[in-house]
Image (cartoon, rainbow, N blue to C red; front, side, top):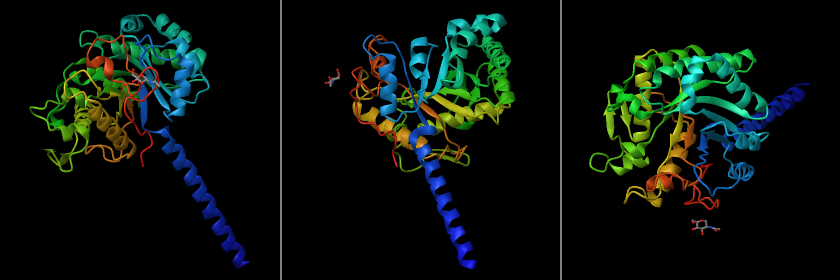
Length: 341
Ligand SMILES: *[C@@H]1O[C@H](CO)[C@@H](O)[C@H](O)[C@H]1NC(C)=O
């Protein structure tokens, strides 16, 4: 009798261990954390079906698209990948003013792929200019209403650039420059949707004022002390400046997803080098997957999409063509470890 109980105890402990292991494996496989931006400004990248197979072969399970490209979405059907899908900036004003256009945008671009595509979020515009920002909240509301009308729940947000902050140094000075950000944040907070942000230490790095190690996640000691918060890397400082800005407009509960981050491998002297890009992106992945969070949000994972999957030859000449982790022929520009320990 006693023996039987002990057996049951060990069996249940064993099963619990197996279940925990399976959960860990699912997480380690990229269910949380790292994705890539799949840009299409190139005339030499593989067709979408090949790209989706390539992503899966690399264990990359999240992808961001800038447009509702139907060939790409069709290729993504049944892939199991998480997808952030973008609304073109040129459509935002009409989406804001015309509910039937918002309904047809959802019916044409999103509805046909549910449930075969895992839509993670809809990004209503990318780096919308301050002049057009007033249209973003009404456009988000209309798309959200259109989704709810057909009983679908997909977070709706917008991807902002760091220039939407009037100040970001020190991080606690972070504040939005546009009054319209308060409307956007109120909508996100009310619906528990995340704010999407393009966070580039590359643009914040200036060798005159910033140590390379601070940009590269390789500083061993605190470089910037901001009240109780000590910063060893620029990425955390930039993300926290956004969290401070959110708090100042009532967005304490709004989470940030980093929709773009990366480092170009050529085209800007000794800053954009293969060595720097390799160091930055590998350390970024390790940082994100460590789930250490930022000094202001310790332990909160920062889902991050690396810019970009491929070098894109139709972008402006110079470093803009060299953000890719891979050449168009899928050879790696430098080794990237998507599953560091
Ligand atoms: C892929 O393209 C890169 C850059 O053009 C080149 O260096 C490399 O040799 C190519 N790899 C293959 C397998 O063709």
